[in-house]
Length: 448
Image (cartoon, rainbow, N blue to C red; front, side, top):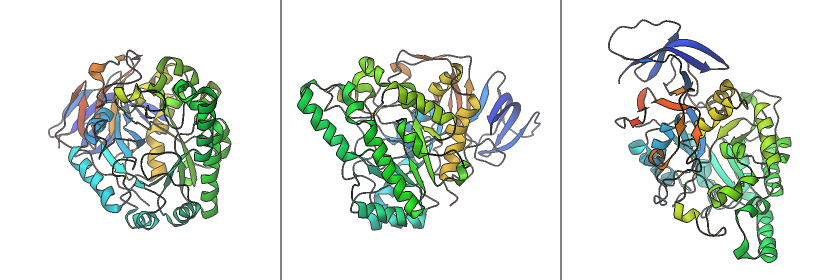
């Protein structure tokens, strides 16, 4: 494997930014120091004026393979992720077939081993009728990121609304339990109400946050937390969207000591319900983007550490699917290529510091999921690194959108930063718009 010496770059890591040299050798960070002298063959990169960050770890993506590959594949979406500075992803089980058995789960790892440019892990899926199969994952807890429970509408046989099933999972799983929390009864009741009042044909995306409302999110999150507290489970609630839910989370303990953690997604930090007028179904997602006061509260919860991780819930659909009427248009937004750039824009706006972005997108996922030797720029760790130029703008258009679906809600938007280099486990996978796909990413290992 090729070695690299990055000179005079601003290293952003563990709350500080300092100008350093960084030597990458045999896929690992061999040395970080103000001046490094090495012998042997290596490629030198001038980092002056640029920043080196740990690679982003996205703990929630939908890459659609197997079965939904007209929307996306592990190959296409991992490639897009790397172009955006995301070196590691954890993918959700609601594919077709869903990852509800150990064999089906392992099939996804085999696809990634052959085709993923990024590092990878996959969640084991929970249904009302596969508890014994899910609990077999305990035997592989150092090889699997977690188990996923949809406590709200989902694709296929994955809505878990049986309390006996929930009790068995929360009491028996030795892995992190990740939940999608929306109360199905509340959502269905709201849907029927507005169909009757407005008429099904008259519903638009503007009704999405009213149908999938704050109450539905809060009640479901509260239920998950009650189960977790009862059994001292390791619970991680995905994509928090409401001000009210923030009262369920604490910042009184360091992240490594928390048993209940939470996440916010970039689109819920960036968009609000006011944006449905412009974007319509393009930003229809579950849970819904809600009224602006929720976005403001999410920023506050992120900065005071009640919200632990920033992720994407990257969920691509085709342009044609998204342009169906509201009730037929699927929920989900493609985001993984632009999540880091979006947060760097918020750095430029003064909403968050660069060090805090690294904490929430790189360090925190590594701590939360107990990922082995990733998430930091540390000597001896895997060299998952991203070089960003905060002075070079990036305009998004269809020519540089790498998702298989071919579109982004950020088209024609110019971000005030650029990802110039992405190293995945020491391999320079992306450099200034060019990919090197000669080496695939690695399967994550965990220290549980």
